[in-house]
Length: 435
Image (cartoon, rainbow, N blue to C red; front, side, top):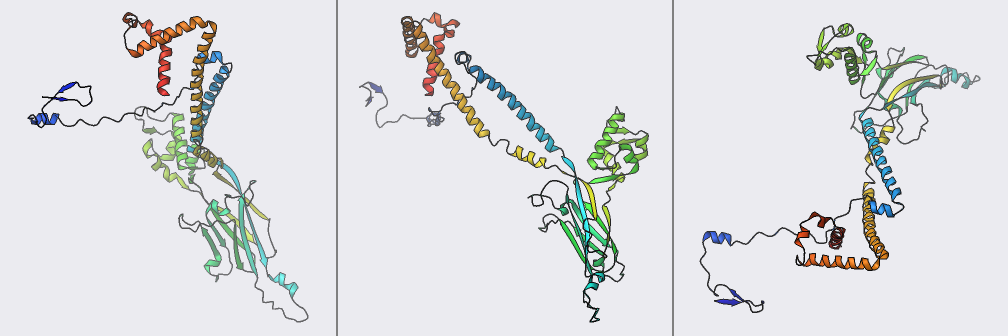
């Protein structure tokens, strides 16, 4: 039987009769399963962004400013290379410890109040009353700051206490019955995370007394990494008095390399010469154990001890006692370098947007160059150019419609694909699809 298609111009189609189904096997049923859905098609309006920012040579020959654009590109490449090199230099500098030497000036003074020699002038000689009810006291003040041009109210300026882990003041009190808290005053840096990290620039100690006494002020510097004092034999070997543990290992390795003490067969074995034998008391040492062997020769640095006489026979000693302490502090430029690296790519989206605009302009210049060549050839010989142009259009029409009318022998030769008309047709076809 036949079923006619409802929309086909009346052309009959062969098929089974209505209401009858042919028998199918299991394999046929599996083959008759619906096909998988086709993959999603790309959006026809998708346009690839241009990325070429090089000015075509033909455009450069026409546009007088083309040479200037090429010079700008060369300058941009040199600038990019310089910036990349500077970035690597900054990263390398941050990887190393940047220190600089500063001078911490410590001022120590004391004031005396209500001393007997001060109250004598207040006694009324007519009343014969020598009791003034005044208690003689003194106040010891310790303060300090870095010797630089930074104002005291500058935000972020380091306080005096931030340079020390502890400050201990021992008073040589002649009164043996005085409580211990009157003889020793201690301040220790609070542990991190406790919330009690108030820093200060001035430390005041007030006590009762009418006699001159001595004060021993011990300052323990805060350092990271900690520096250690080298033993006399090791200090003589490395020509260093104080250094960090990594610094001692590096100095010793330089000494080993300079004197060629590394075993040629077993690289981990170091042969000791005379000065090294005095330090380690052995002929050979394995380099992995060098830190273990160096520990007995490293001791903690001694704290800074300042002796100050507290005088009560003067009203004030302000400005009489000043001490300078050399410190190695972090260079402030380190924070600036970190900030520069942190915001290094802040302008990258803007630069990419400008590069995209330049690429679009280069593409527009290429299209304008084609138009310019078209009208220039037309102006030279309009009649001949129109004939060639019509022939080119006819040829393009034959390519679009089919292969009819084409000389297959010409298509087989490579010269057919090197003609300028073909390249122009391809360019026109691509622009048409993009638009």
